[in-house]
Length: 334
Image (cartoon, rainbow, N blue to C red; front, top):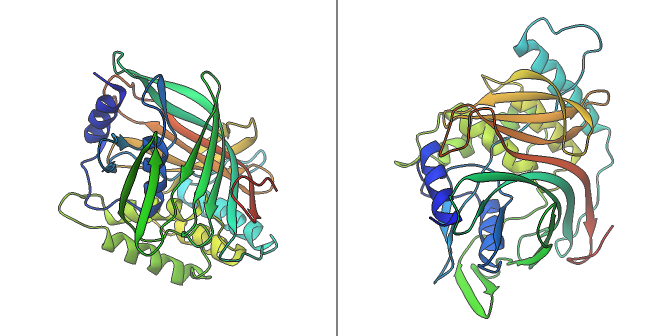
């Protein structure tokens, strides 16, 4: 069994396929499809269940992930309840977001995100069992979604690799792959979220409206789960202006089922506290926040039940966001 067969089986175990993947996933799929078909394949993508077949002979890729939250400390005092503690943490995160200066972004620029990730991979031609590997990740995404981006990853074991991420121009993308070309229809996915609501009420309505729009015969996720997942999609590898980022955290505080997990250490070794929501697919999705400043640190995902040889309690995806910046070209360091 190949690694991709194993991934497909794992994705189907945790979540049935949906009709349409989120726009950000297209970048992930094209990233995997553009890599050589020998050796090891590294999966650095959020959310089980979304699967997309690349054009032509390029392989289908299943991505793994859910919204994660950073955790904030309460000193020596335990929170009165998980729900009220989560609200307090997210309120602190919103205040911290509002204090950040807004970055000017032009449509022809790129959002640069540097992170340290923990990702699932399968050895091609092997048993199909998953292993978890640390990866240093740098990605450049088009601010307006129309220009080709770039991904550079350096796994702890194995060779570094670099992939072009096709932009979407005139409703089409073109992705090179070892002398072949994948083409298809698309909608630009901006990495600069300039037009989001800037207050909690408006953001909550936005999240649930998007959640309702994702409903399809193949997607039976509860509405609250979809809203939580969409919130994670907005802030993952993107630039959200301070007022809108604060509104995201305040809106998440109103989604039922969000609770405090406890103290954590992120992939960069930073002390945090995690908020989580248990998903019906058998994943606990966590957001991680700095214990002192309440700043957003990254995400973490844990299986809550065994799936395809991966035991319950196993971390399947984690990312520590180290830097977000705006640059003029793909490959440029801030």
